[in-house]
Length: 97
Image 1 (cartoon, rainbow, N blue to C red):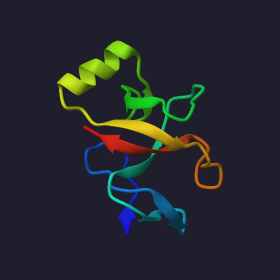
Image 2 (spheres, rainbow, N blue to C red):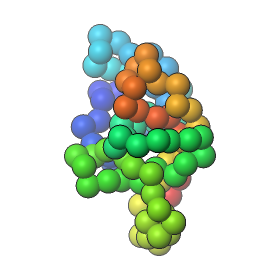
Image 3 (cartoon, rainbow, N blue to C red):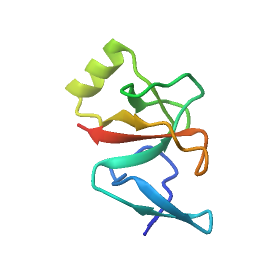
């Protein structure tokens, strides 16, 4: 089990499959994650990048995504928006560098 991260880091490792006592998550696979995002409208396939808002993610513009790619900053591609039972501010996605 992994304790919930307080910010966006390169140590996020998997999709949360179960929340235990509102504090710990069980993860499914390497490379998938659950991340809180800045309030916005998100769609499957959107690329999420780190924001300056307390570790939250945000939908990246084309230039922000390219900047992250050239600096080897992890990005997340949204694979699910079905997170209301866990946390409605979160999205699920696959991390790439």
